[in-house]
Length: 351
Image (cartoon, rainbow, N blue to C red):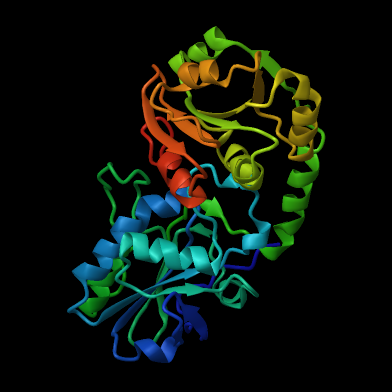
């Protein structure tokens, strides 16, 4: 059972957590603030991402009014399935928190509580993001949502957190002290079995390898689907191809439930089809896999992309309608690829 949410009037539980800059923070670190807002959030949740800029704005808006904002990520990274990362380029490890804070230029501390989740257990956040606002005596005066609109492009009708802070600054009672909280569920350590279950399910998915000719490849590139299509050309004899293939499997498992698909094309000769299939089976590559029908690699090159000089691996990202928006000869940067996928207009970070 998840912990009970801290009731209004409770004294703020103390904590001692590491910030993304390596420094540790506790309640004492914010002793100069008359109002303290504690936001439980994370990297991967689309709702949390939708509120990032608003948390930054809230911090800026009240920076000269003795209001402190601190964000805490309490998700257990080992409890997050890959299919729960379909709206993000990062999971919730401490290292990825550091990257996210830098990418977004956070103006507030971003603390890690994912190892033992002691702070989350004490506060009882329902979802990410969930904000707790305390007065000068560190008594809880508001808990719940930041506002009532998830999409960052929308205009909220009720700015609940903002209103609560304004009332506390004015030494007034908070008019609306509690609201419900919409977002991703907390990833408690008890959910770690879900990751093992997910990995076990991959082993049951069929893996196939079909032969494809120039016309078939050109049809793939034309991409007459509504999905963003990532295509990787590889071979079993290509060391960098073999080394980076697990990165593509991670991307496949992250985004395959979105408007996205990963396709691999083997440049092995047709007589090595069984060897290529065995490799794919070992990687649990249940995506679409093809092998070029003849030994003439120059026809393969021209069919894939005339701009390709021929070195393996080769990777392209094709939007619906056939527009190539990314092309890379040589290994990809997995982090940059995930970011490119999730920020493409056909996928996106938000619901």
